[in-house]
Length: 575
Ligand SMILES: Nc1ncnc2c1ncn2[C@@H]1O[C@H](COP(=O)(O)OP(=O)(O)OP(=O)(O)O)[C@@H](O)[C@H]1O
Image (cartoon, helix red, strand yellow):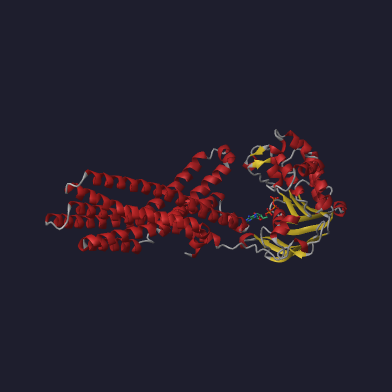
């Protein structure tokens, strides 16, 4: 309830209008059968044609007003639903974006889409109409019963018993379908996860002739959605079916009693119509309550899942220190006896201990899987260290605010993420404060201006998500510009030239040199040629520092690992 109130509070004015309109339509619904009763009685007692016309006109006017109010209710209901659920969606997106990588490694993007949008959509009707319709239904039910008590206490009593029994049944079994609906949502999230994953890897799926296998998996996932959905639906409709059975019984009793009263002269034809009409009307609010009960079960399952997601805490706890704690200019980097494992599994970094002075450049080399990228991920606090500490500018990064850390540290990885938007948006990451002249001056300095000029519409060129419209090399060059524009004090380059041809690599190398002029740099590279201008070298092997020292000294020392790697790399080049 607290949760519901939080999201409905900002739309309370609209909710109130919705409620008033619902009460108006409820009142009008109660009035119309009385008019028809008068009409029938006036007609059967040979009343004047004028009074009949007046009654018919009144009936029509009320029906029209009722319809207009119903349209307004529907409009406002949707409006409230969108406003409330959009706030919830925003909260979920913000929260999810702050969750740590351990969480994101376990969840596929498709599954997250379902949790952020699918589950919330399930709640939208609940947000829109639940409170209004439940109150409206109760008011209508009470109104009908009160009016009926004025006309005939016996029939009113039958109707009251039926109403109470229906509500009792619904309350009793209201949670019946919640767990099943939750299972349905989970199956649907898995289906979306599967679709997203396969479409993201479409090139590999097609190239490996994997389509039939993917379709088989897709069928299996759909079957799960169908089976869980069928079960959830069946459990949700039970309350409604129970009230239908009760209603049929009540209708029969009321009709029998009504006909008896008419035949014995205790009721007019108009009153008999009134009994029939009100009993029929009784079905609407009860059906409405039944429907809302179904929506409630769906919403409750979505709500449980959303609350569960919102209550997840990121392992990466934000620090207190703002960026001013860091000294201006290039930052020194210090790893103090750092151990690290992903998800508490096998350790991938052991006792990493080194220091890099401000403005120094470090080249990190090592075999695949030796832990090079893990070091860079730790520096950006994408993961927490198991033990030891990392300091930049003399400050433990755990005490720094993440925003301050990201402002001062930039990273370019092997996989450049491009977003759906203009080239400008992709270079500035949607930061409108970066001017075009700044972008162009930066690309000029990096020697990348020709790449921008070659784009059909310059900075306005539209890029599609995932970077399908760019070559991998171009994407990498733009990623470098993106980092440069943030004027970082420490830059990590994780295999930035891995996908470039020699000519583009030379361009990139110049850009990297320029970028590293005013900051400390860490360059991870397999190709040792990329590391010609670094000051220090770290050789990693199975998560341990095998060697650390001045590049020139290590290259000159015959027996060093680095010198060995250089010899091998030269032989490969010659071959
Ligand atoms: N998200 C992850 N979850 C679990 N284990 C991981 C994850 N990322 C990397 N690893 C493991 O950590 C180890 C080090 O990986 P890392 O990516 O740091 O190596 P690397 O030296 O950068 O490799 P490469 O040269 O191929 O980029 C590997 O054994 C890898 O399997």
